[in-house]
Length: 358
Image 1 (cartoon, rainbow, N blue to C red):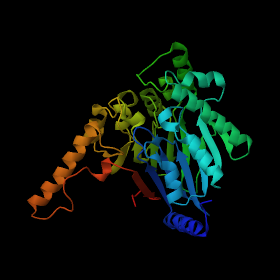
Image 2 (tube, helix red, strand yellow; image 1 turned 180 degrees about the vertical axis):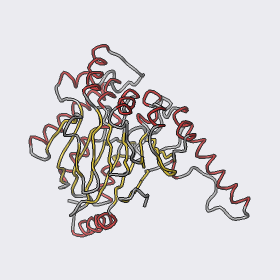
Image 3 (tube, rainbow, N blue to C red; image 1 turned 90 degrees about the horizontal axis):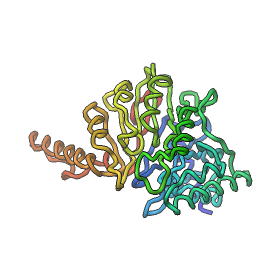
Image 4 (tube, helix red, strand yellow; image 1 turned 45 degrees about the vertical axis):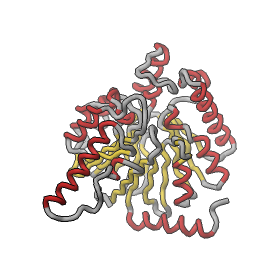
């Protein structure tokens, strides 16, 4: 067991830091092409934790590494945004690790259904992906039957709000019946929208859209939502949203099929509003250059877990500007021009109850 006396002490100190500051933390782990997101917030008696997706890399399981490094002993929610391999490839290992090491998981939440008929349709051409999705659902059901955690299927409706504390609420915005119908239609028509060899693209319709919000500001996590979902949100749930957007995720790693200019132009943002690309080496040219340029030209502060494509050139230009400004003022730059940390590595954002970055 890794949670000895010293580990428990470190965990308590880690939690006190958040309880005293009363803030929300959202961390996008660098897991190459995929998602692994950690969410923390202050609860009355302890640190709240959500693990949203879990992707493996050649270096292992970054989510498990985070749990170990921060001595996490309790997780409120593990959420699978949708059944695509780059969002669940490390999930079985994560669940097994937590159960074996007395890390308490309260709820496991996911979209869609565990019916075998649906599972067979999720993975298309890759035997590896097909095998892994069966292993995942088998693991989930096995742990649930052993009473290791409670289980819930995410479907937007009257009970879509989760009260995190007196200030913060988590709201599931998608998938709704609209997206579920699109998913079923995509399966029936074999409607492939990209050349992903590991996943059935129709499963993107099952992607979660999550808003974490106070009375004044919010964070928006979009996983692999399609542009039609953004358009729906703009016309319904977020139509009259006057809250300030503080951090948002560019959906589907910045894919053009998951971007809508009108949606993003209507978001109320401040001068330091962040947009995050969770992305890595891929054959799909994610993020799309037009998507990146839109956010740059519209004054979003761009962050990325990896320097690739258009992001690489933007980060180089940013570093060069810093150096040139020091040259013009005859001062020494703090570092030589290189890729900004905003464009590489884990991206971490801490927000206090007033909506200010800590």
